[in-house]
Image (cartoon, rainbow, N blue to C red; front, side):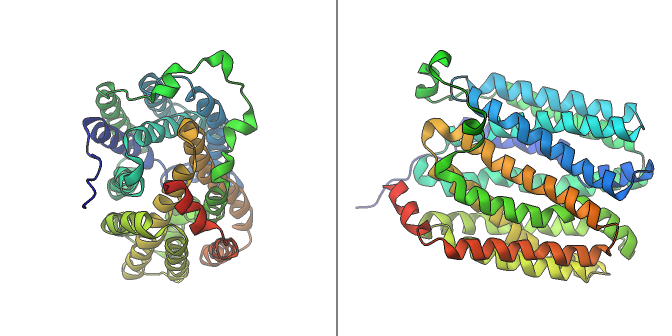
Length: 396
C-alpha cells in the first residue's frame, strides 16, 4: 500500500520562505562589504576580525532568551519585532565613521539577528510535517541560498562602484519588503505552546542555549563554521590582494550549486540519515578550501564556489535538519536557537582567532590552516557510533 505524503507547500510555509528570502538578501549584502568598509576607515586586522566576532557574540547572547519566549509565545509578533529591529539598525550604519561605534552597532545588530533567525526558523519547522523535515527544511533553506546568489554580488557591486550609503539604502528596501510579506504570515504556533503558562516554565540561560538531544550535530556545526569563518571575514580582502576582478563569482557559484544539490541532499537525509551525508559534504568542502587558497583567477574562484556550494551549502542544511529532528516539539525554539548560535559562535571565534593570525600569515595560508577544522569535524563524526541508530529511533 502506497503511503500518502503529508502536505508540505501550505500558504504559511510559502510566506515564511519568501519573507525569509528578502530578510536574508537585506542582511547578506552587508556580510562581504562591512570588513572592507571598516578597513577603509583605518581599522586594523584585529578590528576587522571583531566585525564578525562582536556580531556573533550578540547573536549568541540573545538566542537563549528568545528560545525561552518561544516556549510560550505566539510566533508572528516575535517575527515582526525581529525584522523591524534589523531594518532600523541597518539604517544607522552610515551615520558614523568611528570604528569603535561601528563595532558597538555590529554587536547590537547581532542581538537582533539572533532574535530574528531563531523565530523564523522555528515558525518554519512548525508548519513542516515531521516525515518531510529534511525535504522541507532543505526547501526553506533555498531562500537563504537564493539570497546568497543575489545579495553578496549586489552588495559588492554597490560598495565598489557607488557608495556605502547606496548599499545601505538598497539593503533597507529589501528589509521593508520582508516586513510587508511577514505581516501577512498566518501564525501556526503549536497548541502545546499556546496552552503553556509562562509561570510554569522556568528560565535557565544554559537550558535555553542548549538542547541536549541535539548537542552532537550542533558541535559538528560549531567546528565547520569555525573553519568557514576565515572566508566570511577575509574573502573580499583576499580577492583585492590577489587581483581577482570578480570575487562575487565565488558567492554566485556557491549559491547556485547549493540550490541545485538541495533537493537531492534533502531526500538523502530523509532516506539514509545524516552520517554518510555529513562526511561527504565535509570532504567536498575541504577540497574547496584548498582550491580557494591557490586561487589567482576567476576560473579557480568559480571552481572553489562550486565545491563550497555542493559541500558547505549542503552541510549546513543537513546539520539544521539533524538538529531540529532530534529535538522534542516544544523545544524546537531552543534547538533552532542552538543551530544559529553554533554558526555564530563558530564564525565569531574564527573572526577573532584568524583576525589575529592574519597579521602574521598570507590569507591563502590562513585558508589552508582553517581547512583542518573540517578534518577535525569529520573525525568527530566518525567516532560517534550511535548516529544512525538515534536517527531511526526518532523517526519511529
